Length: 86
Image (cartoon, rainbow, N blue to C red):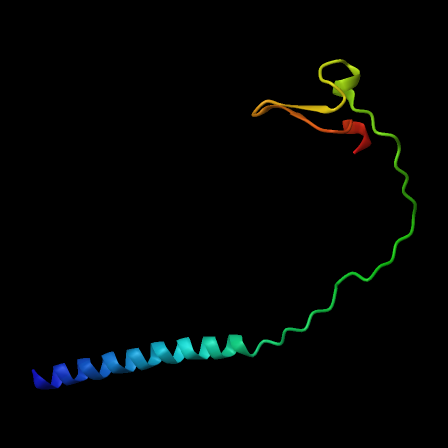
């Protein structure tokens, strides 16, 4: 019986050393990854953009005042300026 117990202890120790060896190998391997980054897209575009006047439709239809935002959770929010000027 003594011989079987000794082999079992040796196999357990080998398994533990193997497990920690793999853990240390993976941790050591992850630490040496270079962190250099170059952007994938360096294309340049050209064009134009125009912004037209904003119309606050709920105020135009008369549902709310021009300085008011209707919010179902709170009731309504009132501002010091009209919404279309923001």
